[in-house]
Picture (cartoon, rainbow, N blue to C red):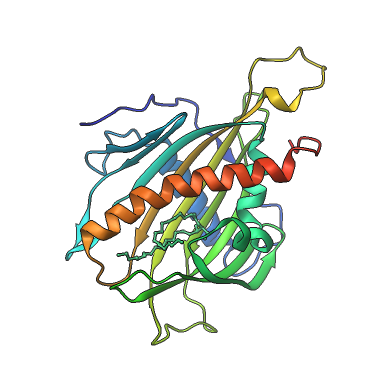
Amino acid sequence: QTHIQPVQHQVPVPVKMKGERHWLSEECDKKVDEAIKYVFEDLHGEEGTWQLVHEEGEMKVYRSEQEIDGIVIDPLKAVHRVQGISAHEMCYYFFDGGCRMEWNVTLEYGEVIEPLSDDCLIWHETIKRVWPTAQRDCVYCSHFRKLSMDDGNDPGTYLVCNFSIDHPDLPISSKCVRAKINIGMFCQTIIDPPVAKGEEVPRENVWCKITYTAHVNPGGWAPASVLRAMYKREYPRFLRKFSSYVGKRVEDNEVMW
Ligand code: 18C
């Protein structure tokens, strides 16, 4: 069964990169454009047939089953809406390497390898081993970006993309199979119910609309049915856990717009 997500017509444009330029800046610009394309792609688009695999309150998780030489590479797209958190806050904590080990229970280890600028860092993580397959690790660049809806009335649109890179300090080890990822965490602030212009917006009127996209290649053999079952369980769990983690971090603070 295929479900069609309402198509969003207004596509945002990236605001110029805030931090200083570095060796991955160009790639970051490209990945931001690519992430926006995935976010706004209609679920009947190029990537084949999407299936709704999980629904829980406001959360919907879709995937498009695809394999290369028997390796599952299903693109995944999830939408969610969370109360009391702004887009900036959601992306801020998703980007923050310092807290990643606190909310991400699938990680065995994770560390910033190279802070490139205020909005860009290189990260290495190992994922807990799942029997009977080899342990996975990945090395990726994490980039935080403000976007603009360009209608002068946007309370905040932000994106974090996490994309795999090769790094000279982290050659593939014999201990882990290197997974490749291309992740987009796209967030829009919505004020609901709306508040008169000039008035302070109470936190309970602030909502974050999340569109999360994942393209993951596990890098080597993993039994397809086990992997799909893991994904079906772990992505919703991540969205649930991460949103409640951010909710707790921000509840007593002023809203970060
Ligand atoms: O976006 C998320 N996390 C970011 C920060 O860590 C980052 C990472 C993205 C995805 C990494 C996925 C790599 C998977 C590699 C394949 C694993 C093979 C396992 C073989 C199974 C047969 O952007 C949130 C990521 C949300 C969760 C992703 C699903 C990962 C599933 C596999 C991990 C299982 C770990 C075991 C869990 C045990 C928990 C106690």
